[in-house]
Length: 155
Image: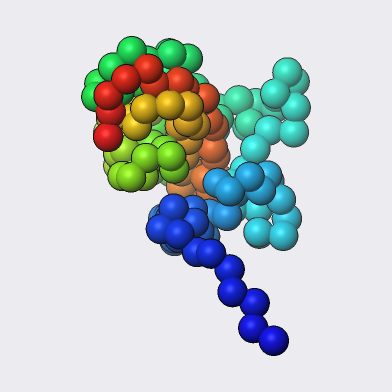
């Protein structure tokens, strides 16, 4: 017996490879789920974070409602040291509700001095979740997200 499942382009994108890791979490699976190998690190308690959790979790500033999806402002920062042997390697911005999922990937070195990005991204209309993934050279990938409602325009 063969079971045929609808497999849309959107489902394919949700299960595609990003940065060398399969990302099934975007289909509603918790990102700290051990079944998926703990792809991303996450704080155990957002109200009571350890120092290591605090410096690695991206701080995302994005308005909850965006009037024009063609130019949504986003700010990402981390209180992470940018030392020669311990620094943020990259920050990636993603929105899986859009036809163009990857909104930007920014590479860094200790010479940047701080892990900070301020940019504009294009978002599809309606409600969506913007994910930010920061990668530390020693402690792996850390993810944060924000829900946004786009009133008009966009992709």
